[in-house]
Length: 98
Image (cartoon, rainbow, N blue to C red):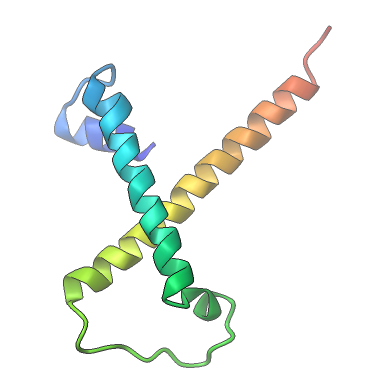
């Protein structure tokens, strides 16, 4: 989904090696980094509203801060994509006529 979006923006053919292997691999690595940062930086407490106020680290680089949040967004988008595929294909296999 993200790879297809970026391929259309950059005018890359959808059947190329870059679109089918490199970009999904890049987004998967980014999602794994998002999972690591979500669990390691204790963002889960903020998502579950266990912490009332978020304290920012002003010594942290702004680029790293935005990269961390972007990778967490990619994590949730890929998780949603795989869950939708699982629900759609599971339903089609159960209801298939014999």
